[in-house]
Amino acid sequence: MSNKVAVIAGGSRGMGADMADRLGKMGYDVVVLHSKSPERAEAVLQKIKDDYGQDGMVFKCDISDYDDCKAAAEATIERFGRVDVLVNNAGISPQARFIETTPENYRRVINVNLLGHINMCHVFVPHLIKQEESTIINIASVGAYKAFEFMCDYTASKAGIVGFSRSLALELAPYNCRVNCIAPGSTMTDMAREAIKEMPEMIEISTRDVPIKRWAEGHEIADGMEYLINSKMTTGFTLEINGGMHMN
Image (cartoon, rainbow, N blue to C red; front, top):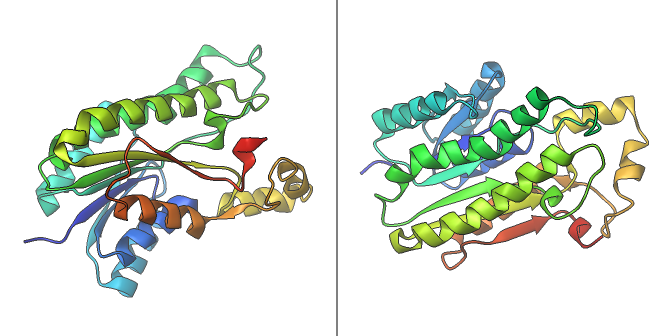
């Protein structure tokens, strides 16, 4: 029987790369999906192969495009014959005043952040439910619960992920396929570090509403993912990994 297989969308950088690496460490063969970073995705996969001896593949996929998602599912099944874990991490977070943004811009946010997760679940669920047990982890945000200026479309998309995941968890429970969310707050990724170099005061400003007074690290998001994969009685749940930011 083949190794268990995990698919991660948005796994080429940041906390997605940390989660992809953790999946390899947990013993999964890993399918790393990316939209425009093949070199980064290949580097993530090569590290998994070198460090843990797991197999995997890289596949280009714009999750807002249903046909791309379907192709990713077909390629995964053709290569590995199964899928056990789906992690939907891909997303975008542009900022704009609502009265100044355009329909094209807010549609793009919803199409990637919400419909993208729905697309991925729709094409992978028929394969996930064939296993004795399986799990889906959708990456939402503290923005699902907390208001942010200039991010109306983003917070709407993340709140939608939470609602979608809870309903899907009900539907898939009879198949022993669990569906959960992670709601990160500010997380120290490569992209964030670059932004901080340009605006050092970002750290102080962004931690004012964080009781723990720091940003999360990518490996802490991966800790949450690992917990949800291993917690066999947890479904329809949103794990808050944001230093208590959701309380303010």
